[in-house]
Image (cartoon, rainbow, N blue to C red; front, side, top):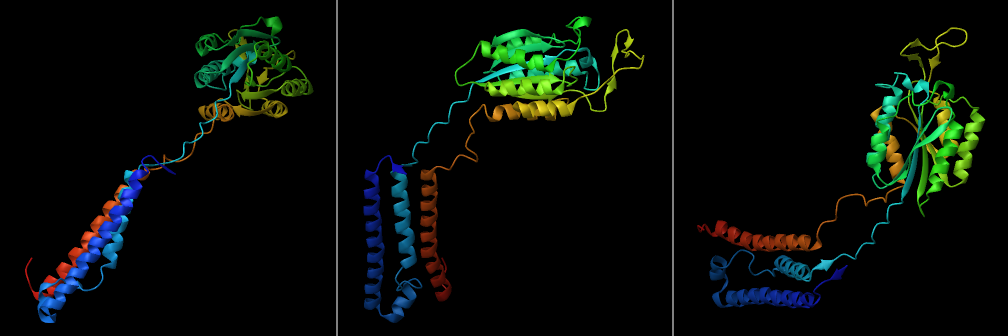
Length: 340
C-alpha cells in the first residue's frame, strides 16, 4: 500500500493530537467547575457522568481524525501485473461430408448441424487463424488459413453431404487429420496453439489403429486433435432423394455415431471429445478450446476503494462520539426532570 499524498498523513496525526488535547482540556475544565460550584450545584448543572474521564469519546474522536487523515493521503494499492496475452489459436476444422452426414438424427440433420457448429466456432474465435477442410473418402481444403472468420462462416453455409461424387464416398478420418495438420503447418504462427477439430459421425472406413496413429503423429508435431460428434449411437436408416440406401444384401444401411472411436482419437491426439448435436455440447467444446487460449481473469469483484472505506469509518466514529456525548445529556435530563 502506498500513499499518493504522504505529507497529509503527518497533518492528520497533528490534528488527532490537538483533538485529544481539546477533549482532555474540556474534561479538565468541567472538573474545575465542579470544585467551584460544589457537589449539589454541579449535580444539577452538569451532564451525567461529566466528571468521568471521556475515554470512549477520546478514542472515537482520535480514530476518526486518523482515518480522515489517511483517506486524505489517498492510499493506493500496488499496481497489478498486466494479465498475460492470450495465446494465438490456429484452428483447422475438418468437416465430414460423406453420405452418412445426411442422416436426420441430429436436428435438422448432421450436415446442417455441422454448418451451425462451424459458424459458431468462427464467431467464438474472431482472433484465431482458421482453416476449413472437408472430407469423405478424401480430404480437401475448402478455406486455406485465414484471419477472417467471416470467410469461414460464409463457406460453412455451403457444406453439404453431396460435395463429393459417389465413387469418392466414405469417411477417411486418418487422411483428414493428416491433411488438416499439413494445412496448419503451411502457415504457422510463432507461439500459436494448433488444433485440428474433426466434426464427424465417426463412421470411418479405415482401421481404427490407422486413425489413432494419425492422431498421435499430429500430437507429436505439437498439435492437438479434438473431435466433435454428430448423430446418435442407436443410429438411423440412411436415405437419399431416391430412397433408402441398401447394402449388397438388400438391407437398409444403418448409420450410427461411433462415439467410442471419436473419444479414442481425441485422447490419442491430446484433445477432447464433445457431442455437439445439442447446444450444451457445443458450448462445452468452445469453452474447452477457450480455456488454454485466453488468460484467466481475476475472480471475484473489484476490491472496494480504500479511501471511501476510511471516510465511512471516520463518519461512523464521529457519529458514535456525538451519540456518547448526547447520551450523557439525555441521562441528565431524565434524572433532573428538565425538558429538552
